[in-house]
Structures are given as structure tokens and as C-alpha cells.
Length: 254
Image (cartoon, rainbow, N blue to C red):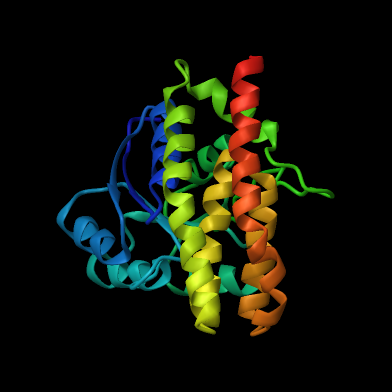
């Protein structure tokens, strides 16, 4: 496959880094946009073959950004949705907005490759998913090392994984503060948005316990039961510290 120009759209730095590293592995070129509005502006002004679009972002979300791109540009570029959920309603909304396929977070290398290699618009659409899917843990596990190991084959010098981990730990305290603040204010939508962002970022680096807590919080907030979110919210800071310690111990042991 010839090199493609890909616009990576995500409001989380660690997510953008991982996606770009995978695209480099495939031999493709990439640029980034950090919001839905920036994505529309860059897509219209540039000449991209593919837009890799995160669905849940502040302001103009990925669904609305995709709709605007389709209104301005028609069938091209191809748009691949990226979502932390895999719900029937999400699939239909993606299709209705003109997206061609989607992958689930944490993005797996072969799932992204399959989505990129999908036939051009107009062919039968598919749902690209990793066989493994998101990590599922029966008991609190600070780090799912399978996720870290899955990134190593396309990170020869270790800089991409190290950068993604550093970016995660730089952003995570602020995301936890946002969850605490919105929960204290009784803002269910705010809690859902903040926990969704933390969930996706945690999944990317294999912070399994933190991802699980974030998933529980997001679910409770989406259902309007903020009282059920209190206990897992109270565990976030400890889970973050445990993830940091586990990664540090893993580095020392390697």
C-alpha cells in the first residue's frame, strides 16, 4: 500500500502519540488535530486520505466533526471513528455521520491496519475490532503488561512507549481533579466526559485498574446515579499511584 496522509484527531496527547506511532509503522504520514473544530478546518484545508477521528471530545465531538467534513468534502477522505465503547447506538451514529468504519480503544495494531486497508467508500462497511478488545480484569491489577508488550514491536528504541506513559502521568492528575470537581458539583455529564477521557488514556498504557474504575464511574454518571460513583472516584488517586509504582518496578526488573 502506498503511503497515505492521515489526520489524527484526539484531545488526549497520549492517544495521538500512540496512533501516530502505529501509522509510522505502516509507512503512512500523519498530522494531528486536538479538537473537532480543528479537525474540520484541517480536513477542509488539507488533502488527507484518511481522518482517524476520536468520537468523544469536548465541544464539537467526532460525530459532528465527521458530519461537517462530509458536508464540505463529500465521500473523501475516508473517516475512521475511534471509540472507547462498542455499542449498537454508536455504530449507527457513526454510519449516519458518514464514517466508513471504526476501531475500539485501546487501538490494536492489526485492527487499525484492517480499517486502513478497507475498500474505498461505497463498498460494504465493516466494524474493525481487536480480537482481544479492552482489558478485562477480575481483580484490581495495576498494569496489564500484555498491553505494554503489544506496543513494543513497533517501538524499536522504547521512546514511543516511554513518551506515552510520561504523557499519561502528566495528564492523569488533572483528569482526576476534573472528575472530583464535576462530581462535587453534581454534574453527571461532566463526570461522564472526564471519566471517559481517563478511561481511554488508561487503556492505552495498560493501566487496567484505573481503566476499570473509570469505566464504572462513567457508567454510573451516564445512568444519572452519581451516588454510585463516589466510591470508585475515591479510589482513583490510589490506583494512579499503584500504576506508577508497578511501571517503575517493571522497568527495574527488565
